[in-house]
Image (cartoon, helix red, strand yellow):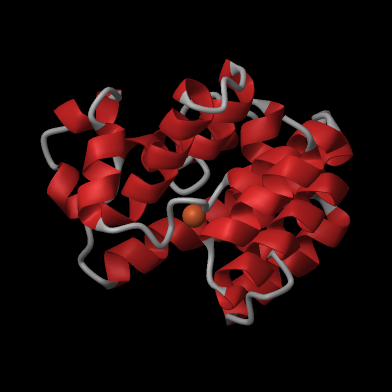
Length: 186
Ligand SMILES: [Fe+2]
Ligand SMILES: [Fe+2]
């Protein structure tokens, strides 16, 4: 699949607002990729695809997730924010035939995971600091990323956890694993 094809797919599937976010993430991913040792073309492609299921109904998400691991996750119900990411990863693998590295970066763009790959890190941070995001935490992490991409990634994971704690929301163990592995790598 080419970058242009991924861009067209995102354009077809998303509202103007979400498509704009997607364009910003794809651009940020391309720029961040070399900082983590990832390939810029693959990062941009993953950026265009990362949220293609963001506006789907729960029915479609669950159907798409049918074959994936998350369906066996005991508190799937408390992790609604992760469904679109896992569904998009599944679609990228099963329908688009993309390789494991790209599909996993899409799957784990919201939760992170233990031992994140360079492409995982690129997409997670790109999604956190994309230009369309105006929250204080995002602005702070964007500033940190100008100086140090690894530190920005850790900061983004910390803010993600803090925000879940604040809302009494379920924290996916993968996000804690991501935090632990980033701290270990400092
Ligand atoms: Fe997302
Ligand atoms: Fe996103």
